[in-house]
Length: 368
Image 1 (cartoon, one colour):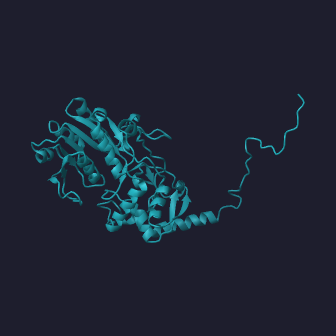
Image 2: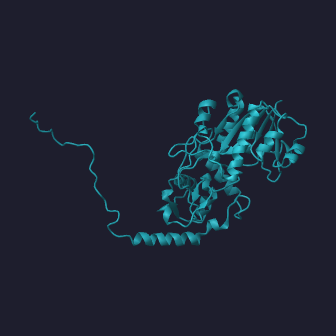
Image 3: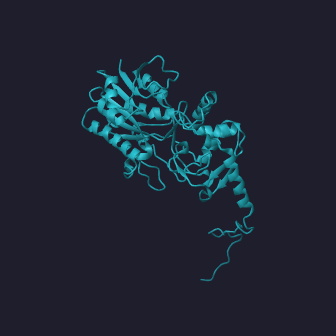
């Protein structure tokens, strides 16, 4: 039997990746710190250790070998070096912040890296390059997979709870900076895992390559919030407000948005589009979605309702101040006052004539 090691495996894509591996006949071992045990992994071999330090990785893996390693967690640049001579195939998971953004178009793998300067992103770039150099040197066949925000049960981040809790608390009005029209790339966990499965199937194509994962359909921040609410039988009254009217923004990524957020307790979504393409995976590996966003979000919500996250700013990063309803109400009240005091002639309708004529009777014959 062929063997596979998954490093991590207890977050959103762990179970779907293991399913992809088992359907391909792999005997799976899970290497993780043992802090998060999830249902469905009890029958598998576990290596409990810490994949963040070279000397511990060496001790944890010992003299063992695997036909395939999928590394979703840990310091992957150290794992990539430690796995030389221990596997013939390595697939690693990284993130999309490394991608250079071009205005107005979805980012491609060929667009290159962002400029150096942010220490975390610099290390992510270094990790990708380490993995690809090992492939070029012939140590193993390696593939880099980039994740955007991945949603599903057991996700490390649970921004959907912003919606769920406000539905439960009947917070009908939702502040929507810029109309909530920013788009950020998201991917359902089974769709991300399926991309990895397809890369496993095509080493002659996927070897030495980078692939971005994403659902085929993407949503604005407002549409995403609406979808979650409607799955719960609820509708928000969205209150459009200009970005310039909001408090000083912070950085981060509500719903995996990246870029700047308002200082709204609920988060404001991305100021600008942060869209990445999955075209390379579609054309080279034959990728198509295996689940729809609506169906997977329904399952995700069922999990969240059965296992409500703790709002403590630690495990899932949800902080109590993100649900500061009093602050939201003060901002709503102020904005209502601004609209009520606007001059009456602001927003007057201007009739615009269509560019082409629409004659109602035949034109008179002109003398020529």
